Structure formats: structure tokens, C-alpha cells
Length: 161
Image (cartoon, rainbow, N blue to C red; front, side, top):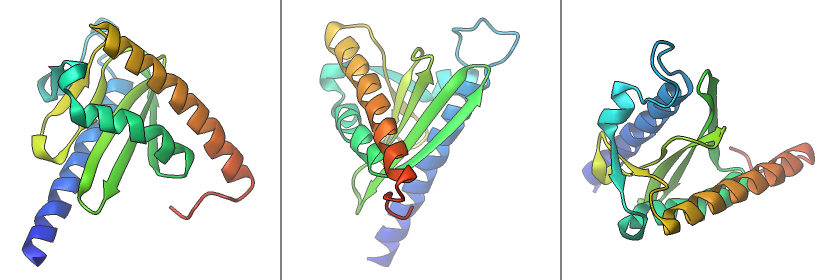
């Protein structure tokens, strides 16, 4: 049992590091590269998926705004590529994911990292109407969640992190 827990923690730590590296690379693109191009690292890790078949991404999109608003584990990286947010979910081995969102500007790949994919992540692109709607809703809900988080933090109401 302890070995399984250790493996699970190792997978979760790898996923978290991957998400944070992806966020850093998106925020700090190569100055010589065209603005919309991805680094070799991001391009090699990201696998484009169709929204309808990306259940893990749908779960992350649904849960992320709530986690952000209620004080979940949120990070921010800012650079030439804009403001990139990442949020980690860890709930007793269930629905483990990390979400990487180019937030300002809201362009570029939205990436979902899950333990089962090891060194790769799901890339939710806006290539179909359902995906465009989900991405738009995610941006709106994260914006509202950040406002809620700021209000709770100002009142001292965020749970300890």
C-alpha cells in the first residue's frame, strides 16, 4: 500500500512540474520565434485532442474555476508571452489534473496534464464549436473565480494553502 502511495505521489509531482514548466515556456517564448509559435518543449509535450473525447479536460475545465475561487493551488507566470495561470487539483488520487491557461491574452494552447500521460499533456484547441464554447466559458469562469478569490483574500477568508 505504501508503495502505491509513493508511486501516486511521484506521478503527481511529475505532473505538477510538467504543468509549471509548460506555463513558464508559454510565458517566456523564444524572442527570435514568431509570437504564435510554441517552444520545442511545449510542442513535444502537447497532444491535440477533440473536446468531445477529452473527458479529463472536461473535468478540469469544470473544477478549475471552483478551486481557484475557493483558494486552491494556483500559480502565475508572467513574461513576453503574457500571463499564464496554472492550477493543480489533487483529491485522494481521484480526478488528478493540472491546468495551464494562457490568461492574458487568452490565446494559445490550454493544456491539461494528468498523471496517466506522464510527460505529455492534452491540448484543447478551439477547432470546433464545442471547444470554442468551453474555452470561452472557462475564461469567463476563471475571471469570476479570481475576483472571488481576491474578495475572500481581502477579508481574510481564504482557507490556509
